Image (tube, rainbow, N blue to C red; front, side, top):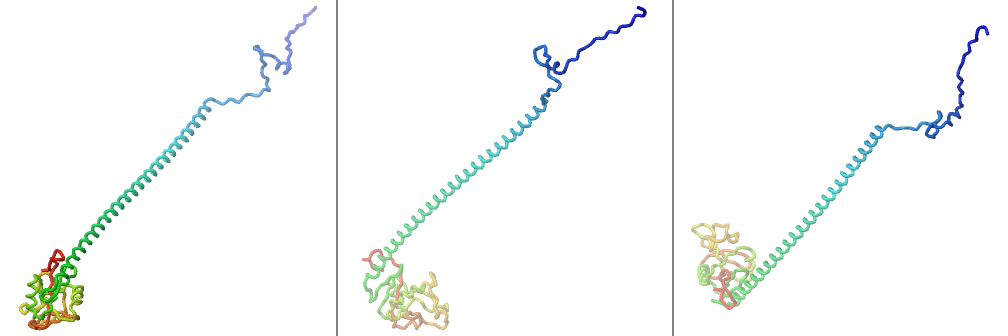
Length: 267
């Protein structure tokens, strides 16, 4: 041959279809995933850790809040129980105090009643003593409260009545209040009686026989300064004054009760 023709060799590759390539097995016997296979979604590990941390923190905060609320409820319940206990103790103390006061009042009431009965019994004995002592020198005794009064029947002047009362360890009547005057007046029977009030010339004033002890009642006649030589007497209606030497009045003597039994005389 003349000029030799140059021969070009090329290798020929047979392209396999996609279906055949998908059918190709891996060396370990598994199929290779094809291009059209879906990829799996993968979450990074650090994000999972952050999420778990946040959830743990929220859970911890929730537990702390619930614990705080439970503690507060327990505290409030405990305080309420203490308040109830204090109230119960206070009520108990009040009841005890009231019971003690009631008991004290009852004791005082009983003591007062006993003293009152004792005094009434004592005064009753004194009254019987005075009223049962009989007539003395044409007169009689009558008692009221702690005082006995001797009413004479004889007519005397003021000075003689004063001496008569002294013989009975008493004094001419001094009227201290309206109650005493009412009692005395109820025994006068319309008669006039000398009482222990007279005008003292030296002092220029009216005085009771025991002026140093108590003032006695202040009668209208005591306001007059023109009663020289005058002495007071008691009638059923009033207290008036007349000459002390007048001898037509009876006497009223007064003394405190000092007799012990109804058989004794008020002397």
